[in-house]
Length: 232
Figure 1 (tube, helix red, strand yellow):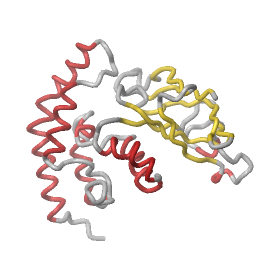
Figure 2: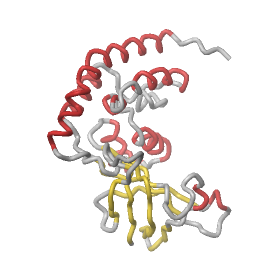
Figure 3: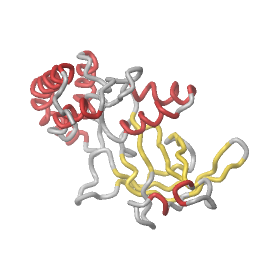
Figure 4: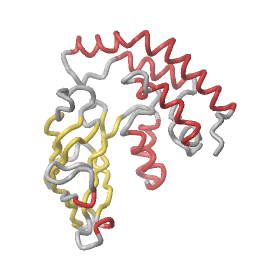
């Protein structure tokens, strides 16, 4: 297996490294200070939006997406060293619009979303205008095994009615979070690995209740790994 980086990857490594050194690392204290000054652990600091604009202007944007229609068109091998460089700061991946769970959610929408869903949710995510969350883990069952999920979605006419209790719904506390991808059981009689579906749930939907950010390693800051209850 040949693991030598391509010339394209080498150029991107230089660009991302230079951006981190010029813009991200010098602003880490300001990022922390703006959150502290707001009095809200989940505050979205202005410096983040300022740096996102710079990264987008530099063409260092959506590098994670392998589909060139939507992102960098990079393979995993090409993107891996860039992710490593971004990971040198706790929040830098968001600067480049390469932060989880948006990365996985955008990949799902790009691959499987309808044109209507892409227009409504994928485009603003790609533009960095909104954030998203992913809602799978549940506290009553082993979160590492999605075949044990209990949250149900029942078809009623043209809608699904969801009821369930979720845990560690990542990013749900971000003030710009607008859409959740919820993993729910739609066919309880199917084989375990075929029971579940993913449903888009706008955060403003009645009954989509973000209860609280759950503590992780004794901290509930950042953009939250939240307890969520879906109630009808």
